[in-house]
Length: 115
Image 1 (cartoon, one colour):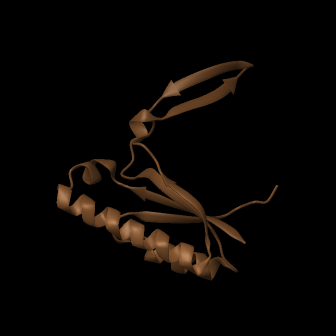
Image 2 (cartoon, helix red, strand yellow):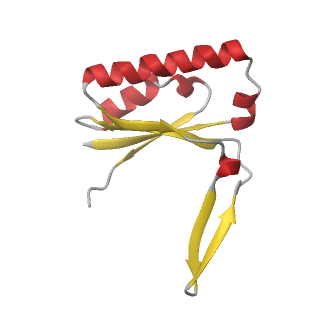
């Protein structure tokens, strides 16, 4: 079954990290992605640009509305994701717990709804 691991964290805190800490974190993410690939569970994943670069689109009464971000006053923003293929939720949670940002952010685990 496929699961999306959505990485939520504090963009302001991340932006304030010293260069050495950023380098260490990126190394940890490289090792994490490599471990998932070697285990054969990694389907894909990407880091997202900051939330202030996002655009939201919605249609109201037949008219397209385009809104520039950020949108919500929240402590955590979506910073990236991994799509994994594992047998069950327990395995997905195990991989989420290994994510480098799990120690200082939140990893949302959500099953993919096959269409």
